[in-house]
Image (cartoon, rainbow, N blue to C red; front, side, top):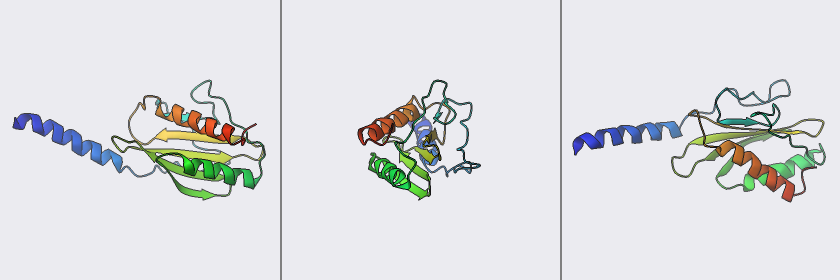
Length: 149
């Protein structure tokens, strides 16, 4: 019986430690861009059209008031917590229900009205499509709020 508990205990401790992974230092806008996605399939970046075929998002207007409305939409998403927002940039975190893994969501509004969205897992290689679904959920909410053209 004790031999079965040890692997479960080790797995449990690993899962708990994975939940508190600090935010990566590549977050934020640099030279008017968000960081590219790594080669792992746990990241979506609409600015780089990654993965291939990811369509861009365009705001109805590049006005600051429109981006403020985008911030409100992000803040209303379940399990989403806005960490920082300044100017035309926003960083939010979403925790998974079961294992409490943290994913980062970044938005950057370009002067031409493109809304670049980057959603990435902090740990692991695969996310089972979670980041793609998050970006599509955000797209649908922004369309319902008449914030996209």
